[in-house]
Image (cartoon, rainbow, N blue to C red; front, side, top):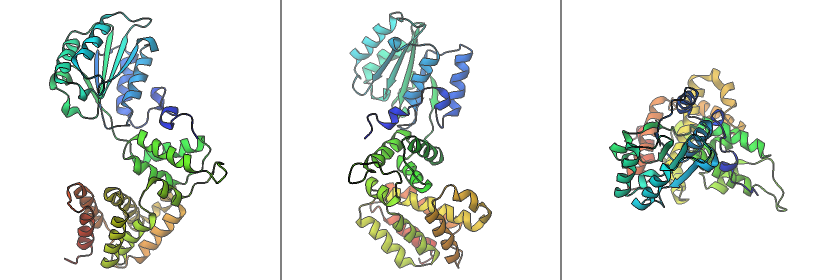
Length: 351
């Protein structure tokens, strides 16, 4: 349906379009304005947070043309000969720019010998060469390399920023998504703008009728089917079991989720997100109007009913804290659903 991947189509073209990295953009903008450019940068952060996009923008802002911009994937060009070739090329003057910029992605993949060759280049760089190294695993980068770079740490995309991005791009693509769907896609993106847009593209590509015509209004059930995300009812039933103090119902809901082979960490995250909203509604009801802008109509109706059902005051911060502990324990659990089961027992004080 889309000729160009959404993450490429909507890749930021200038600093003002970069999302969630203001702490980095401001510094780089200042260095451009004052003409104080370093010879080496290290961009650190999880995938899809904008490291290579910002590197390209920075190169453009300092006047580097396409002829003098080089992008190297260290995962497939990791040997000493590759870095020697880079070093020899860096010595040659730029074609039509003041600088030559080398963006080395996944730099942590370089071999031991390649690190040594790169270090020599960073120790005595040509005046016209700028190196921008990007990595998702800084612990694999030698300290000798790190110490010769300006290091910038990219933050994971917040769910709010991702959600707003998804709503905006969906609108531009001619689709109508409600807030709860955008929030779900943002959560599935797990802090990566690229992954969130990849999920959105999958949803939009499948949102057509039997004649192949675009379906403007997308419903949440279809999104759950397309993405394999936990069904809303499984999230709601778990939280309802807490509010109604029904341990057995809660355990059965977890078992249903496990039987559907769901990602328990994602399931837990969706529970926590909705439980948090319920706690806010219970203790700060004046915020209902603001929350209505972040939730779908059905979700808001469910949460208000949930607060009414909570006769024993189980929707509280202590329970939320217990759920957060369970979320953090899932990766270490031999049985992935066990932390949620234990959390349920602890919240309902049946141990």
